[in-house]
Amino acid sequence: MATRIVVEAGGRKLPAELSDSAAARIVAAALPLTARMSRWGDEYYGSVGLEIAEDGTGRELMEVGEIAFWPPGKALCLFFGRTPASTDERPRAASAVLPVGRVTADVDSLKGMGSSLKVVFRRE
Image 1 (spheres, rainbow, N blue to C red):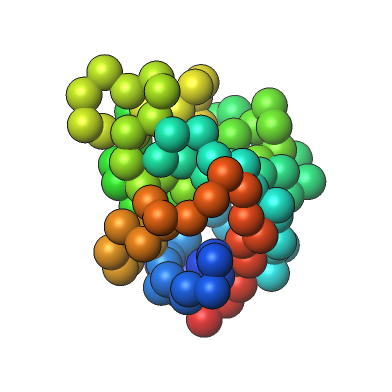
Image 2: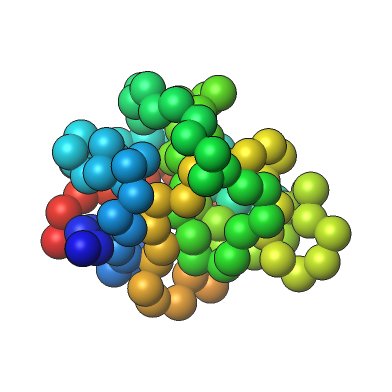
């Protein structure tokens, strides 16, 4: 069962949901989480201090709006367009990330935000 959350970024509140994967359950149990996120193309990523091991579900090719966890950086990632690693219009992570959820609203507003910002992930 999905966990409904809100992603607060740059003064905006974006509805989202976490999936029912093992990694997503760890993220859900730790909410609320706050990160100072850096921008890499159309991806924001930032450490939230969680330890989540790679579990075989990791992938690099993502969809716009997906939220993922990057184990080496203990970071949540928010994909909203092309990244420097993209080979087409889809976002591509620098290395395998664990998908944990997705923003359920339009993420285009993130494109106008700066090189870093504070992001809060909390239950709805």
